[in-house]
Length: 276
Image (cartoon, rainbow, N blue to C red; front, side):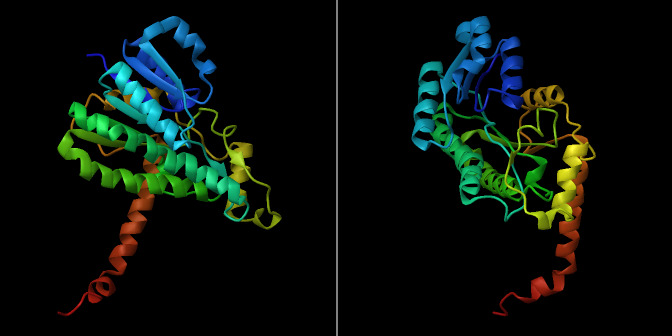
């Protein structure tokens, strides 16, 4: 059965890959991106099957207008894919205030705006699926990605809560957590002026690893796109969809370490309850 998808950030990466694959299989796609010309080739090939709108997700009013228009013109939208985002690659003190705000505005506030705009429509139609593109970096961390992790951990907390709030309405939520993927990952990073003091620290190690190839980027974007599409066929929806060997290995190690640390504190933790 064909579905209708609303996808942000469709000019490249997972957004473009999803759009191409979904159109090829006969689904309809409402694709948003900052420069609509990037999809001219697909629009010429698929015509009315592809609905395109310019959108900067940091403009909350524009998000509401575009989402409302998509539902009005296309009717039911089955899947909302929050994909627009990027990674700020620097140590915490290297970023400018403007870079920090832009990272938060795009990855957190932009994602929340799209979801909040879609919720009334999803409730009214009796359900649907929200696919939030997060990252393994929403459950684990790497030096030099502090602000990127800030956004992904925030979005994951939001989506975990949201899923509980909207399940009654037939709305399901899945967090997609790919590891490092061959989608121009390195070239797409936004950087800040370096501080020499970090050269021989874990942050410097990660920088060198990306430059010399020792930081592994193994994820296959085509396989990840297909896994996202396949996931939508399953209900109840998985809350998380971890994709990639590094995603599994690093997320699991982080979760095991956090659980062990919690268990070590068990007696102290329980002792701080009131005696009343």
